[in-house]
Length: 211
Image 1 (cartoon, rainbow, N blue to C red):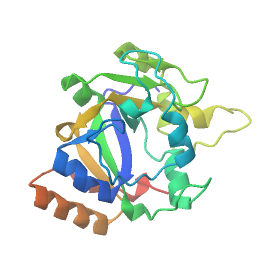
Image 2 (tube, rainbow, N blue to C red):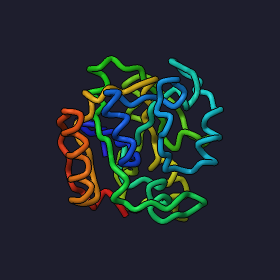
Image 3 (cartoon, helix red, strand yellow):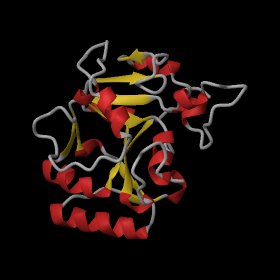
């Protein structure tokens, strides 16, 4: 599959993190002093701590905590671990997990600095890029897969599925094109938060984005 005309970027977060995001009007990288002091992490704590000291070897450099991270595809292996409580990850009800969705075009329009990888960012085999022509190196067939386990024929599939797009320092809410949720209860919860902060955005119930 060739690079799609419109590239969507997916960030998963706990629904309760939206209150701070709406209040601040942006998604803020973990290293920033103005980031959410009560942020609810939903990922692999061991991996998150390891990534915090891993440097990014191309401009704008820094390390992983200096970026807001997205995936190129939905239904990531990490989401699977979160929903199932695997590999030491705290199990979460899918109703509490939301997708914040933007596009590469929106990130460009905002003139944000970014880097991206052709696989899981922490994996030694993954390569990083900071120019648009590098998008041809992403395996677009694999990032869109719903079944991504490694196989005898393709023992590197899981790594490629987890190709990442990292935005330097912050992402304004204005570039978010939609929010994906598991069910109507989650949508109702989010719309109440929007009303409180006088914010509007498409909220779409998409249970097929989950496990």
